[in-house]
Image (cartoon, rainbow over all chains, first blue to last red; front, side):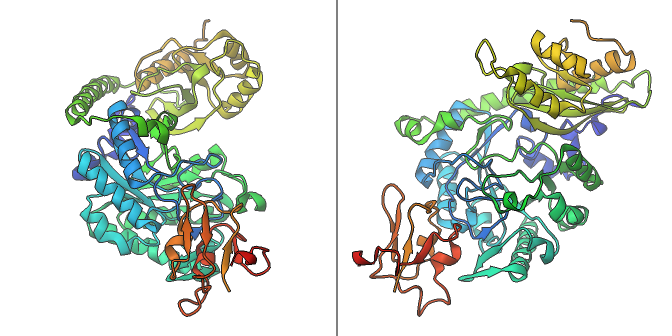
Length: 469
Length: 74
């Protein structure tokens, strides 16, 4: 039995080990594709693409596209010029931002002029920034040459089904060749175009990932086959995302239920096989800015950007990235030391929630955490499962009036976890969580996540010590 | 004959403007969209169905002008 060993850990770059070296190198600093990179590097989406050419039952266009954004908040639409300026502003303010994506709020390829103009402007002014595109695939083959010409680094296609029968329960209509198609006919066209688009990307050497919205009662049965198929066709990652219920959507009216965390975990495990599966996706808004767990979009609104004078400095950005790489190297070395086999193997596996705000450290307070990273820890090592979003217990005010309610919500989200690891956990939440069987551990504050997990496991699971306050 | 955009339902997604074969659709600085009834042919002579209606994501947002009470602006 080995410890938190590189191959098993699923936290490091190692989850990418089945990938060829040239792909690994390409995604080394891409927060959305490399699980390790997402602890260090940031991304941003620019909302330049409002039009869409299909309708999804999980999306309500009165808000944003549910595919890539949380519904409920409308984003500011940007012109390509405004978007490029925003990108430069963010690049200087958040130099760890390495990737710009266009994901909506509609479909980028239903707005080709705006999308490609934005990419051209960014490429011209900041060639070190990687470009990404996320599409429903309907128009992908049509624009493949343009995508190649602009050096778009990665393309994501959302494919939710294999059979037109299942697809027809997801897409009520598709606008194609100047007609609105419905039912099976619409689904046949869309699926054909999506799989053709995937093939075209692979043939043209464009890195392509497939996103699937997992809707248990609709496409649950097809998940495994879909995962095998898209990987067989050459997608380098398959990202299974839970369907999120959005206000005013057709699915909400039909009473379609989102998957539970355990349903999601089960389907991800089934699909994992020998290939990489993405588990850290945050289903960002079409205008998200920052590290994956955060959204600093409000700091970069149109009116704020308009007033800014920007001096883009690639050298400054490079120096920051070098610092990050040194930090990653340090953590990698620390991880190697952890591969010492654990002395005992009682065959116990536990789920542990971790509060982190980046850099792969246990560095977030329990009360300010917007999400917890869930890890499965056993004598074999630790494995990242997924993240769970919560309402932070403290909203910055001294007395938390609704604290009790919020705490109950957090407990319900973490009920299957044996412990919470955070930089600091106050007495109030401790007094509520501990009696409910969730250990509150802040003695491993600021340690690398994996080291903290292994230490926790040895001390509290294997030796069965109780937490002292 | 012409189509009409009910502005209270419009989400300003620009989709219809791009599809219109007679360039009857335009928008102002606030992204409020409207159809010029003098230019709109409901796509007759171009396509089988009005393109704006076919791509509009909001059901009932684009309707026939006749009967809306706005015909007098013609």
